[in-house]
Length: 486
Image (cartoon, rainbow, N blue to C red; front, side):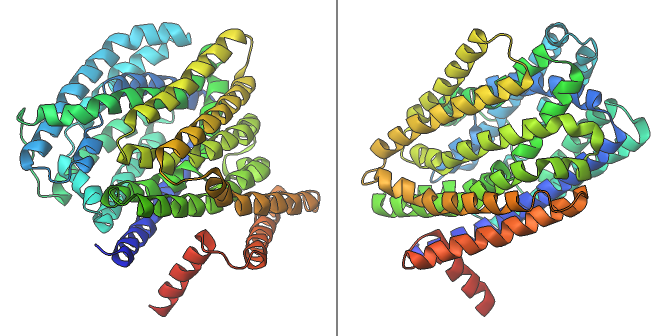
């Protein structure tokens, strides 16, 4: 595959995958807005507690079979069958453990309702494990159109199931019913959209497990890094505060994780294709890093600046307590986004152990902080997480510079310099209009329009002043010109 064809495949895949992710998030946001009007923060907090337990047990046994299949250059049907079988075993154990953990979880969170909710949600992982393993080929073979189609339909099934349940029940059981119905619908959809019919097999179990064992350790660390703060908040605060914190966490990931996650679905197989050409891998990484930061940094900071008005418009006044959580957590996510593509490069080069160590160091730092400051409430926990993420960023950058041959610190800094300057100018521009009107909706529109115009103008001017260097701006401009010509 030539460089031009490969870049075109990556670009097309990125557009499709980002599009479906944002359609997915738009559906999710619409669902959240509707549910926030139908249900109370207490309902969200209760389900958030139960889902933390569900996610913890699930991740403790998650062997990452999808990654093992993508990394395998020539998988056979036996590999797919063995991966599917391994996932069934893992999920069966997961469901059993969740069922047994239900009373202990209710005692930990101090809410008896958690127990009954978990008895029902325990069936979800095992039900989900029956999903057709052939869906992995959409990502592996970079068939992003099919991936787009599957993800969109899957989200719509869950959306309809949850909203219909909420209209009928009007309490937290609607979220339980929506989850189970959506999962069952997704399993049926996976077999309708892909012809593969996996069977029980143990022939290639060892090949799958060689990669999966490190993925398991990494997945546990990532889950702890992303969710341990919520466990602490759920323990120390009421269900109402937990609900506001959880919704804030969901909103705060949208400008970063929900944009970069689909990009990395494209980048991972793309990095694998060029892993034997280190110079090309370095070039692709820096370009991907630059494009991601060009969008993620202003989007995250922008959300923090309009959080008050956005919450009032979308969720209503009863969710005001979520605003300070959003403003801190969105900064956590933009820092975490910085290392996303670098982590996939390290995985591509076989440095899985380095990625795992980086994640677990942050977990250990956070645990130490929580132990030292036992009086911290929800907002202080969010600030602690921000400090730990900053420390992780410095360590990960150090590791990345030593793992990628020829990569310099100046290369990494240049990928974020213009976005950081442009974002600072955007923040100043938004500050100048912050008292221009007393209408919350009008202020939201004014801040967003001011931020967009000021950031795009600043980035364009900086790029021109620096002599139009090759980078994310020129790359995006070339792609825009290509689309216009087509």
